[in-house]
Amino acid sequence: MKEEDLYDIVKESFEKEGYYPVKKQPLIRIRGYKPDITGLKGKEVICVEVKPSFDEYSAMAAMTQARVYQFGSTHTYVAFPKSDWHTASKDFRELIVRLCEDHNLGIYTIDYSSRQIDPIIKPKFNANMNLEDYDSVIEQLEGVEWPILANSYPEYVRDICKYIAQNGIPEVIRKELHDKLRIEFLQKYWLKESRSSATQQDAVSNRVKASVDAAMELGLVELKEPDPSEESDKDKLALSYFGQILSEISKEPLNKSDPEPLGDSVRAYFSGFMMKLDVIQKAVDILSKYSKPMLLGQSRCPTCGKTYWDLKELVADSLH
Image (tube, rainbow, N blue to C red):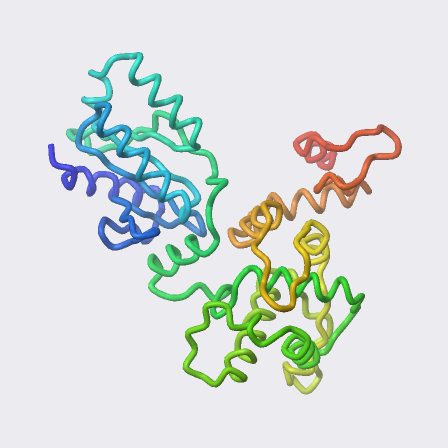
């Protein structure tokens, strides 16, 4: 059985499940590698590495390739013919299941005769997803650059929140914020991997503006008071509650010369916001309602001594 013969079965199954677009190899690239199937649903990106047989060589090769795809996808599968999967020894199948579970990979079997795919195990969210690779895959799938990272980087958004918080700025005019960021941070800071054909001054101004816009689109900086004359440069902006949390969990120093790499906590926080995960909003709302700001584990409940909370328990309580 040829590998390409199985692609259409997986693609058709994804399309029936509401993924759009779904693209076959070699249209999508992640760090130079080409997933066999890549699909998009909302901001969920799923990648599948398909093999025409199931044996030691094909299974190891599939998992090795799939782990690269995890940098640019939210969920990643390996897939094998159903007939080969069921004729393999039980010990070998259990070994591959265990290895995939260890690396957050899912497994599909493909039934050629019925043209259906069945999950053996489902993958967990890719904890090692890289935001730039993920953004690149979104752009390749949709054919356009994803607006919230157009001419910006997550490091800039984080540092804008840290700058506002550390300077204790309750409100600021949009243009004034642009000017402060442009002047107080070194020019080279704003030219990270810049390929702009504009002058350096214009390139910096464009990136500052794009980064503030990205912070606002993510809801980390909010519009406090629009300008009555509808001049957006005169709008009043403020750090939102979620922007304040971001500034607090970020342990990286505010470096105005070179943007510091994202720490694990900030990377996870951004991943949630970029995917618009409702659970983050729900968790904050519920914990705030109960006056238990435990989302980040930075305080202890004075009455019960807990340093964490069962979110399901709080959700159930909040419904009564």
